Length: 192
Image 1 (cartoon, one colour):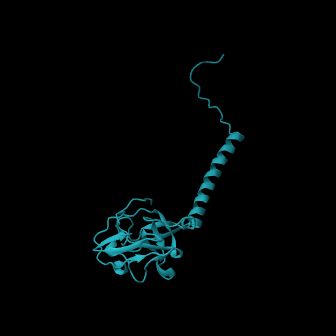
Image 2 (image 1 turned 90 degrees about the vertical axis):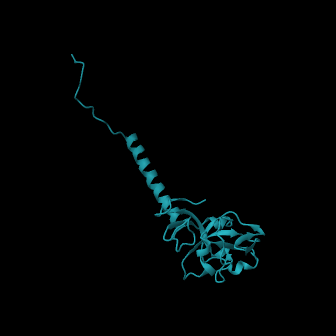
Image 3 (image 1 turned 30 degrees about the horizontal axis):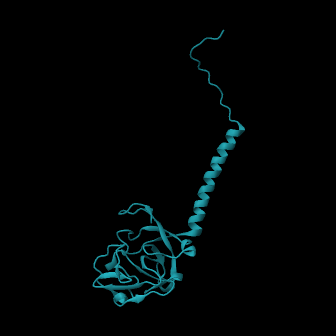
């Protein structure tokens, strides 16, 4: 007769074949997802650093960013995009990171310290009074496949206003900033 009550005898757990298949499928899916993420980042994306203070307060000097190199193969940059480019295609310089303020066909001018695109005050970014209009002192009409980009920290930026950079040809644009790493002053996050 068996007694009712506590039993200190442990039942043996049996690992069967279906449980092992399920465990291996989770391991395989996890490894495949990690490999796919690395392939996407290294084949489609690019990692670089922001140099200088021209994009503060959005991006900071030394901050790591990920650049989507594929997106502009299927669509054109649009106003507000933060792009990475090589000025005049010069591969011996660092990557420039700036915000697109005008696209092909637009007319850009800086009058009385304010940016005008197509004779309308630009309001997407609140710029301080622009101290140096540079080449944008006179109206600049962008040709097909030309973009005008400025730094958010407008008075501490070398950008399309500079004669040595000017309007940026689409071929010189490497991609769109789509993710920035955390810095001491800014949280990590996706760019819009």
